[in-house]
Length: 237
Image 1 (cartoon, one colour):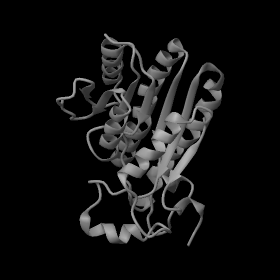
Image 2 (cartoon, rainbow, N blue to C red):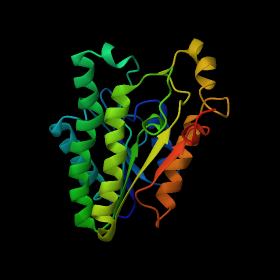
Image 3 (cartoon, rainbow, N blue to C red):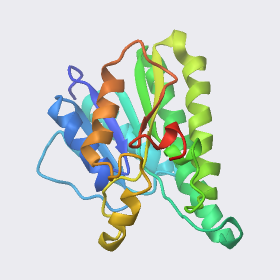
Image 4 (cartoon, one colour):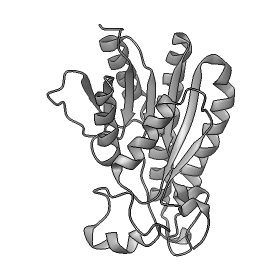
């Protein structure tokens, strides 16, 4: 077990933004415990893959145990796991509602509660949620009620936890992306999606990662929700 390097836990780590976060923290010299439902081990001995549903407490215990047993600490938690289901509010099914709560809320709750306990024992830590700019700036032509309900909850709890633990060495922040170029978007939809941003283009994974790394380094910043959305949050255009 090594205890001389920083350690980050990343959920939803197998592709897109999550994979970019993993590689960025490795570039900073962090050890990484990476989780997603079907993640597989790779060649880097300082990236420990823990497969499973982060909304299940037993999976959370395996993630935390992997970090402590292998590296002896957890310095940062990136709550990246989440789903987006966009459709008119009355079209959502009960199954979609329960799935959004399971991934976006239960996943956050279980891993964050367990990691905060570890960070309190250490006397320091940093937590970042990935939310969405739609929480504060909905788009009439892109209904997203479940995202507002669940990711809006994460935005609120980010501020609440930041205040709760500000004097105990734990910072809590969030990044709210606009539409980012990831595998979840069909290639033939990209041009239309780009027009939803005032800047007229999609965001890139690296731009979200840069925002997370800024928050990582910004020791006097807590309770912040940093929009990375090409200006979408600023108002209508």
